[in-house]
Image 1 (cartoon, helix red, strand yellow):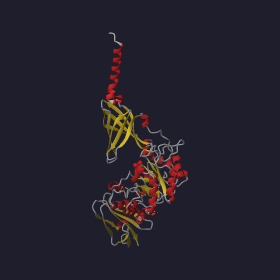
Image 2: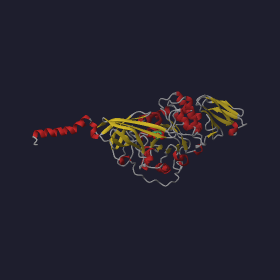
Image 3: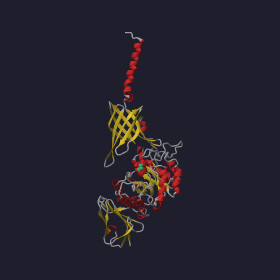
Image 4: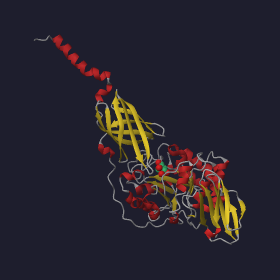
Length: 517
Ligand code: GLA
């Protein structure tokens, strides 16, 4: 059969239309197979992104595969791709006792990327893009050699537990230059400085997205001039702290110090910083936990080498019995637990679990059960009194974590009680001792002070008021004439007989100083 030119043209047009029409009807068909490697990029401001990766497989409409985050792989438990819309559910189990955290990803294809919203249980949804990537992109940078272990000389700092403020608990990613300056002002105006608070510490999210051509780190747009900021804080008679990670990224996804340890230490010193919190975070992608001492020692040495006195704060959540080696790698303090939250369960769970490791403290080297939540609103005044009393008995760093600009009189009194702070700052740095059974709600804690007196904490962990008793024989004070002082009421307490019993409110404390006459 012979076709006319017209018929041929019509046939060709039909064939072209047939191939294009389904795409017009369903734009996703150009991308119909999502099988492959993807990166989910969430902008976190200042040109920084938080990245997680997806290794996907599509069969029909079903999507299976896994999410890869900091080398941690979690399977997709439910996923489909239908009418250009992607839906995936990832459920991660972690911690002990095990907790689960579910994230639902949903979005549509726009061009060759998906615009996705990720909703993690109990958190604000975040928006990002899911783009084609390569498996190599999910790999950590090549491993750098670690130094041989040796004892880093003591820097002579933090003879008593550091006192100050840190931005994380209240401001998290919303901290900026103006806020830090205003907090420094408030630290002076509120009387905090007089009470002994010195350090104004910037936590995560100050870091710029890129290093310069020589590899120097810089602040991001929230922190345009770190040197000027440090000078401002110093002009108030205060000191200033900074934050980084031994990994390539900080916990919030900003630039870490990996491969730039000495250079960053020099930069902090040149800017005039006095304190560094060094947070493990993505170092877990490169190093094993057992390698933490060498990783921290590298920065301990680097800080010393700058010649500037810089307090070194280790943050690796208490793994590898850090209290046994933190001082050797140059640490002045080391976190002993995961992150605190502003509630009784978190604070009391952390605080009352610190007694076994209390003997590891000594002047210059402190256990750090995390920053204060006092004044952030999630606990009662009695609970915050327990927080302050317990942290002081433990000789914990007192780093306020609230907004000093707007705090109430009650919060100010909680934070600036000189008699309680004096317990925390006792020059001997002796450990607290729990006298009661570990599980008893009536918890008795004592600590010897350098003037020969004894701090006594009568804590009530129960949700109802109860009386709590200390027997003087348990602290070798039986038959001694004793003077007592209530450090929260600022009043004398008559002490006589074999024991003292206090009525303690729910989740509250009676904190005494007992002075043998
Ligand atoms: C970790 C630390 C916190 C805080 C955040 C910042 O969770 O433990 O104290 O520094 O990182 O991202």
